[in-house]
Image 1 (cartoon, rainbow, N blue to C red):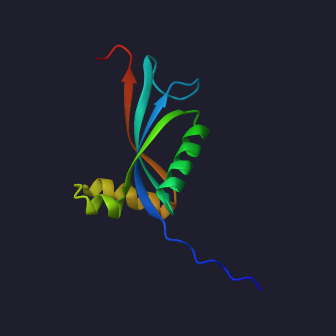
Image 2 (tube, rainbow, N blue to C red):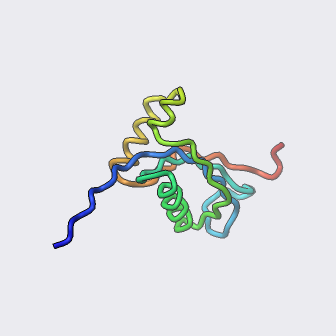
Length: 112
């Protein structure tokens, strides 16, 4: 009989994902890319990043760079001010074991 490994607890990580253009990406005409603020569940930040990139690639997004800001607990320890609506989205990502895109900022070439 094999012993089951205990499940490692999941945490929610805050990620800023920069994307470029790709056909079918759903970004508005004239956009050169976007920044996506995401909350992703994972046993560690590396897993959260891998899952986020995989989900965005299935949506035809061209992921260029991912910046991690840590788990909720790490951000609290650093003194980040985390609003109730942000906590709600993090709780949703954890409950659904998912990636939640909380905010999208579109980049345009003609903007300085």
